[in-house]
Image 1 (cartoon, rainbow, N blue to C red):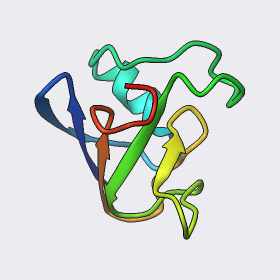
Image 2: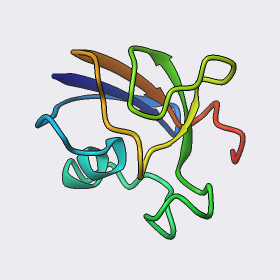
Image 3: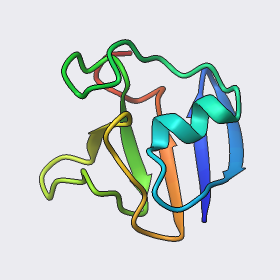
Image 4: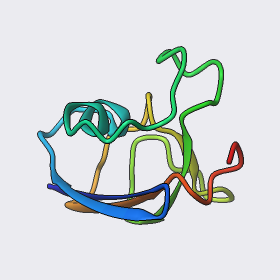
Length: 86
């Protein structure tokens, strides 16, 4: 699967292994995404899902905690720049 990250005004497209969280994939790719606890408690890693689905998508909000969200579609766009914590 492919994940496109929007982070600090730049776009990065990364191939991802199935079953990894969005944060794990970004860290493996050395994108330096914002995060703190990695347990879904603090919200530092929140990002907007612009396209695709994850295990954490909600119908009302497309904002997810990337440390918990696992892609469930073949292509996902993750926008850290439009997250509530930015």
